[in-house]
Image 1: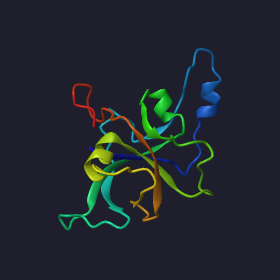
Image 2: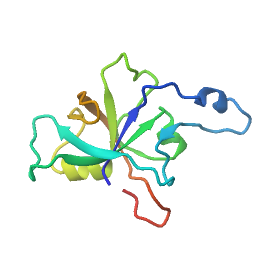
Image 3: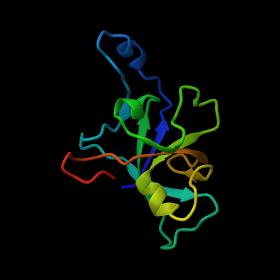
Image 4: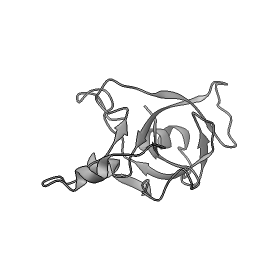
Length: 141
């Protein structure tokens, strides 16, 4: 499954958790991987038509900035979502390798812009490794 991750537009309660003894990292994500929850839909890629006349498709997750560190998802290219990426800054997304390989096989996805959900153009700023979404015994996508 191609996946897009964006910083949520709501406050995340992770700061207090990070300060607890023994906590190495804390993050918020919705829907939670391996929970059975799933959010997906059509996306558009600026300047590109779908070859099938149907929208490109991807899964979505709203995340807090430390999600990738907490879940040990490797950064492949570009940068991760940061605390400075807020509702008051240009919207950005991080995509996984599956999406990058499926929709940008022969080009660099960084700097490309996509829309989904509220149809705001969001710039791809990073590519991360694939994760297991539904079960530990499935292939990471």
